[in-house]
Amino acid sequence: MNPYKILVVDDEEDLCEILQFNLELEGYDVDVAYSAEDALKKDITEYNLLLLDVMMGEISGFRMARMLSENPKTANIPIIFLTAKDTENDRLTGFNIGADDYISKPFSIREVIARVKAVLRRIEVSTESEEEPELRHDTLVMNLNNKKVTIDDEEVSFTKKEFEILKLFLENKNRVFTREEILSRVWSDEVVVLDRTIDVNITRLRKKIGRYGKQIVTRLGFGYCFEG
Image (cartoon, rainbow, N blue to C red; front, side):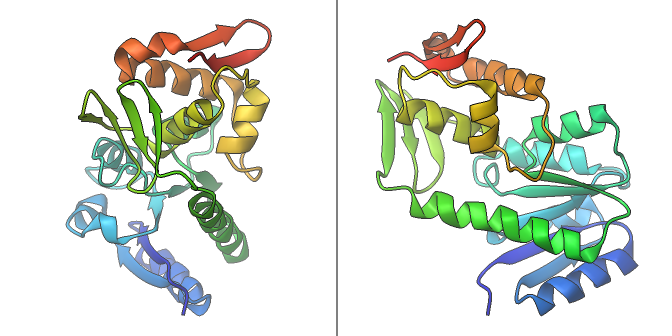
């Protein structure tokens, strides 16, 4: 039995049932919710991955994802958006929120399953590669086991992408990373991400780490590095 638990959130009940059936055939433990409101009544921390529709009732998928990103307990749960909204701005919004993938409707079930496997495979690789429990820079501490960041012993909320970018920088202090290198290490090869997505995430990251934000330096024409 596959150990991963997935939550499908979509107001199209037939689509939910199709996704649940096919993902369960792959061995996943799958629950469904027909609105963000219903999904938020569940214990989201139980899930390893969310498949989230964008256009739903009172709380949209984007809004739900933002709510989850603001809670340290759910900020690192991977999200794949499933949506008919397929403009460049829609994709940029999804990735800036911290989505791990963005699949446009209509889609094939085989494609969804392939994307799900790719995201979960990256989780496995990330977990296996965490040899040190903590990364530090002065009072900035990243706990790699519980995926928490503290500054002066105060916890700071990060999206999964922000966490991974900061981890990359702290593991490689004083090394300059191009945008392309950051994209290849933090985002999957299966998705299209714009260069300005990196800039947006770096700007947010600088603000969140307060006085340490100045350590993230822009090397014009090259990329970014964390000086330490």
